[in-house]
Each structure stands twice: as C-alpha cells, then as structure tokens.
Length: 160
Image (spheres, rainbow, N blue to C red):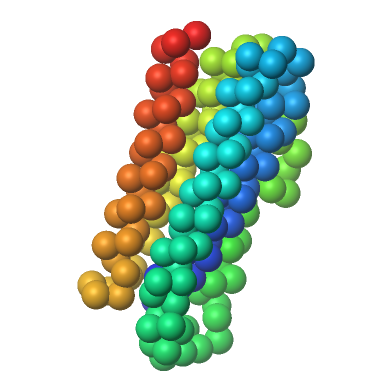
C-alpha cells in the first residue's frame, strides 16, 4: 500500500522530470518566441514541485508515523520512483531522441500533452491505493494541476 508521503515524493520527481523535459525542448529552438514557451513550462513545473513539496511537508509527520506500518521496507517508494522515472518524463532517455522527428512547436506540444496525460493516469491509479483520511484528497490537487498543464498546452497549440 502506498502512503501520501511517497506519492508526494514521486510527484516532486515527476515535476523535476517535467522541468528537465521542457528545458531540453527549449534548447531545440533558436527563436526566442518558441524557446520561451518551453522555458515558461519548465518554470511552471518547478513551481509545482515546490507546491507539492509544501503539501508533502504538511502531512509528513503524520504519514511517516503511519508509513512504517504500511511499507516498513520502503518497497512502495522504490516502485513509485521507478514508475516516475520510466513512464512519466523518462529521464533515462535523452529527450532529444524523442524530438528527433519533430518539425514544429505544435508537434512538440502534442508530445508534452501525452506525457502530462500519462502523469494524470499515474496519479489517478495511485489515488485508489491511498486510504481515506490519509491524504487521498491531496491527490485530487495534483491531478488538477496536471489537468491545468494539459489545458495550457492545448491552448498554446490553438494559439499557434
């Protein structure tokens, strides 16, 4: 069983991975107008990481006391980190390889939308594993943030 502290730890990692993804995407474009779109997205991911960290600290003490009974060996945290690093904004792969055939900002934004959707699916799956009263409602906040990313990216495509 996962606990909310581990989920927030993974949420922070996903946001760091996302910031790295968008920073690498920005490097693909020499024009400032295009580069700035991705740099702003990277900054948003960094801000979300800070927000998730603050939320994590809010429930950390309570969760750590309970966590020793839910996952004493920390296997769930290792599993979640593995998912975050391999399924959502994979840091092991060079992002520029994924961008190899990308010819426009809109194509790259579509890749980013798919990655954001993957993170939403990840959080919704994890939410079902968290007991009521132990932070399940906090997962809704994370999902809402990620849905906001999809909306922003979609609006950017439409504005191009």
